Image (cartoon, rainbow, N blue to C red; front, side, top):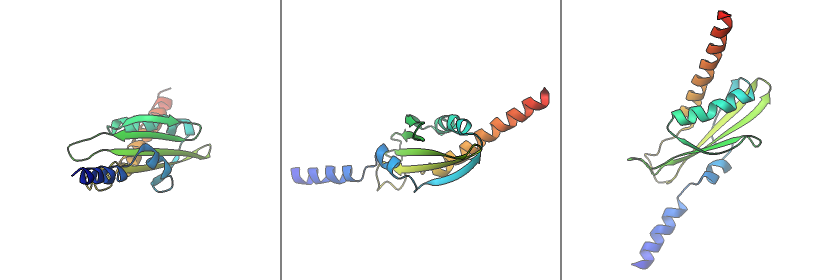
Amino acid sequence: MKKALCLLIILYLAGCATLSDARNAKGQGTSHIYVASFDAVWNAIPKAVNEMDLNVVGENKQEGYILAEKGWTGFSFGERVAVFVNKIDDNHIRVEVVSKKVMATNVLAYNWEQPIQDKLKEILKQQNLTKKEGAENN
């Protein structure tokens, strides 16, 4: 009985994704290039992540990544997310989102890659519209 329990625990832990797993999966996520400054994109990412009901748990602007997670829900053991931000030039920024299930066998875990990209596009579009509206009112 103890051996069976130990085996189950080992299998459970072997199938778990960590934030490091998400961070190490760079190049395997969903990417988009934004026409904006690095700072505008960088500052919009935590807002996008938070609006998706994920928690930012780490960031490193110098290395260009933000880490987030979603805890347990009624349908999932949670997800780990890494957002990579790379400056192509002053006005073109590549953002890649990697989403990992905490439990590899959890078919109900949510893939956050495209929803985060969509929310980021929405936020950046709102910021650009606000700037244009402000410029027209001057």
